[in-house]
Amino acid sequence: MHVPAQDRNQLRGHVKDKRVLKYLREMIRICRHSNRRWVRMEYERAWEFAVQVIYGPLPVREDFSTGDRPDSIVSRVPAGFRSQHPLREWPLRKIVKRFSREWNYNTFEYETLECAHIVLVAPGYSIPVKSRRCAACLAETLAKKKKPAASVAEVPQQKKAVSA
Image (cartoon, rainbow, N blue to C red):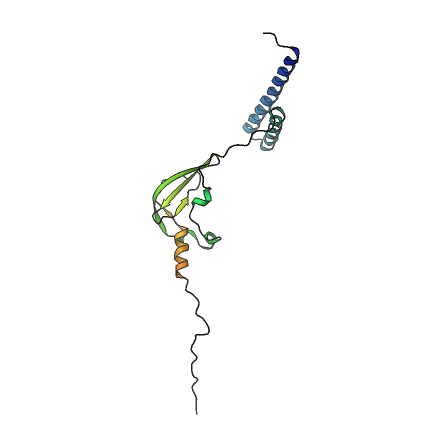
């Protein structure tokens, strides 16, 4: 097959571009292997720049999440509550159900407790357990214990004793 000279130059230029990307990827691998973090980051930036120059801007990734944000599934606790109350005060509840949700190319693991509260499992936590501490239960019990303040106007006045 005969390729015109104009097309041949474009093909050669594209091959050169591919060689640049291959070289940058190889240098990233070498820097990762030799634990040169800062140099690796510079090569990664150079590779991203070269890809944008060669291929143009990449299309925006589609959102394939199944819906809810990870923090919207978890049972709510008042702000600052976890830091005020130590972990040993939280009641221990049995785990009834385990499930996971995909969101932005990540998998989040959840557990439903016997009190119907949902807890987010820490990533990389693989020890099998049968129960967890529930901060939401403690928050509910503390909210129930609060009593309304008595009004000042309805306090009866006591008579003073008179001495002779």
